[in-house]
Length: 120
Image 1 (cartoon, one colour):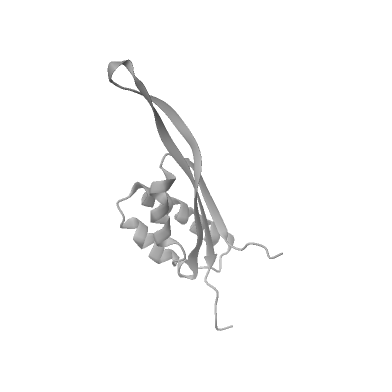
Image 2 (tube, rainbow, N blue to C red):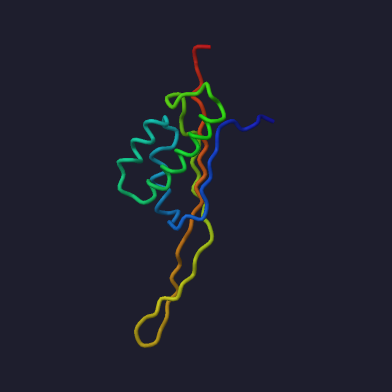
């Protein structure tokens, strides 16, 4: 069995709907680290800000654990947006009624790896 390679960062319990964060993650999956960061910095979405922090953390883990790496040698291998628990709140309505307000949470998992050299 082959062991999974890469440097990982996980951010949990973010109050953002996973359905809104996943389209942002699809834009940066399998891109180089500098390209992914420039895409995320120029997007107005809340999910882009959350993903950018997690990608930056994974890159920092990679650069800290392997001193021979450079930022240009990294790429986003995997981004997973998982659903977390839901905060349930009561939303009071007219005529004494109440609705349930679900505040969805997500967990972001980012795996960054070094670009394989084809010339060897």
